[in-house]
Image (cartoon, rainbow, N blue to C red; front, side):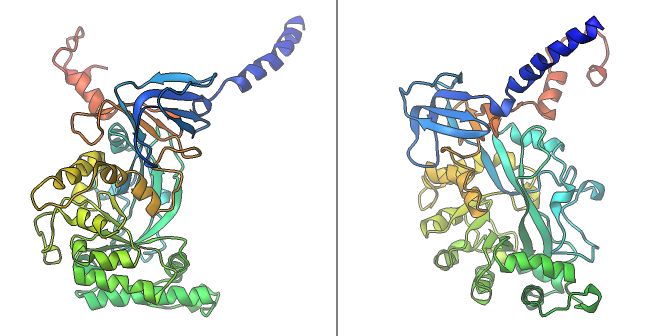
Length: 442
């Protein structure tokens, strides 16, 4: 009985200690001495970033005193930036693209199309998550791909934080294909693809206005189900952006007419290889673009006008451009976005080339994608923003630089990945006292 009484006396103290112990996200951190890129103005050499509760508390100029109660991280000689946001990717939805069982981005035989939700299939433990996070990417736009229909479904925005299970935004956008891909899926021509788009949006308008009966079995449209029409209501009222894959200048002009026909739509162009040819029209329509921006050779008739100056000319015309990896061949490499952004800076230095300034290039992989999706607390370092912060060894757009440390929602992240573990296992100077081959060593 005495032991039980003593234990009871200790319980309140133990409980108090557990409550008082801060979680990693609650720890107050001060990153000092680095070149701080805020995306809110000029960089701050020797600045200080204060973080607490998973948010940025303040960004202070050089020489500012660190308030009491903060753990100081010295970033002298390094760069401190917001985390990279992949403008479009397949992160969390594909482990092996060529294996259908490991690929949830494309439904080739599903009766549902626009109603499909990629967020229900996300797996943030997939191998490429850690690989991508190690290169400074803290969040990503994850997109489905059109399958049976030109409508691929609803994509999500995900955090690449270690242990993250909940997306930042579940039903973040709708994805549809036009141009050559859309015409191929829809029946063989652009008129067929356009008819599919208009039919689906008109059905959604009927649902939105209450014209369609409530009973689902009374709705028998052959091209779009009632579930799909209901999902597209979010596109009509602007709750979800409509991402349209399109490349040819003439196709882009056609897609832009959707803004007049359906004023509530938040249109976003994806790829837009010939966007520079109609840059002023895109800018006048206030429509942003997500593209890789690395195409300079036409791979199809709709990309004959491809140029490495596409992004630079779009931005010069006033178009908001975010870099992503929309092409399936590059969709597994959003980790290379800093390199792609750096190439945009290099393009500006070539004779006759049109590229981006350093600030514009870095914004295209951080603030711009966040702005396109209405994430005002991401892609920048300012009070109240998510504490997604990367400390780089040097200029993040230089190939010789790499993250030395990173925080997602204020939590320090491991820079370990399958590649780093394999590199250690097979490194020639690794000790091997067991006599076993590397594949058997633990």
